[in-house]
Length: 388
Image 1 (cartoon, one colour):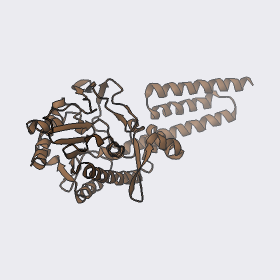
Image 2 (cartoon, rainbow, N blue to C red):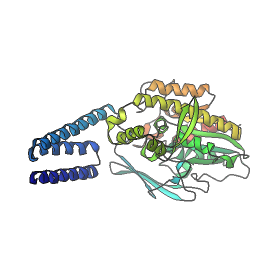
Image 3 (spheres, rainbow, N blue to C red):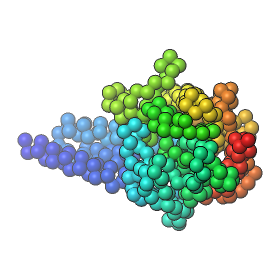
Image 4 (cartoon, one colour):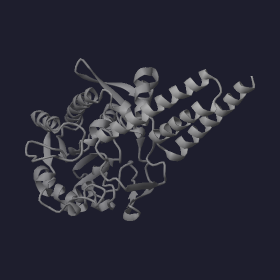
């Protein structure tokens, strides 16, 4: 019995070491490597063939996880902006929202900053107005209204309030039009659809809305299936007989569909688990995205009798060579633009104005978000198309 007690004490100590390694190293692969080493150590230290065999099995399983995760990591493209560290104060901003999952709190200021390899990239204050949108210039009473929706590209992350696209559009029109920047970093297309569906945009019915403008990027595709820890409480959709159907939040779905939930949460830890079924998930994302854009177009027409305009930083038929670092095949991305064009959505191609210009001029260095210069070019094109 003394040997069993010794083995149990050693096993408990090893589990504690693995737990500490997981917390300190913040890496499932390295924690598994520690477990593999301790398993081999257990082969030597444990008493009894059963305990030693168990330790060897644990070591083999842990080593398998290390090798699988390392191999999956080699196949996964390096993330853009590696070495970039972003922060926001207050830390929990935007705040939770019962319908959308999260949304900027009205009438607050948030300070966003970024560093690259320890060197400052930007530090900007984001002023949020009474409507929960980023501050835009005032307009005369009864002025034509333009609604700008989207994520950090539309929000103007890393820029001053007056450098974001909606504010630039107002300035180029001599502040005679009213613009609302109803976007937030990390937003998904799901949240835009749900905002209309749940009546959050009905407050603008009866106002002179002339266009609904969105900015689309390939990174938004993964958000349609909730691939991002910040999207857990956001709306989930699926296609049922070709129709977009809201099914609750991603957390609700994962807790009620245990296999899918387990795969997602394990995929957050191990790259090789995340890679399982990736192609099928990407195909689903493409279908969902196109359906969501069609739904947004329908809402814009039904509620405001206004067009949906999509500004796109996205490969299209004119793309030459590789475009960005999206894991989805470029030909499939190009097909999305073709489908949106067939749907009659007004498209504004950002590369038309920026492709021959220095990268540090058209985007924030090391960060990749559009610069104030790019926003001004896009705003000028929107003015040309929308202001009659």
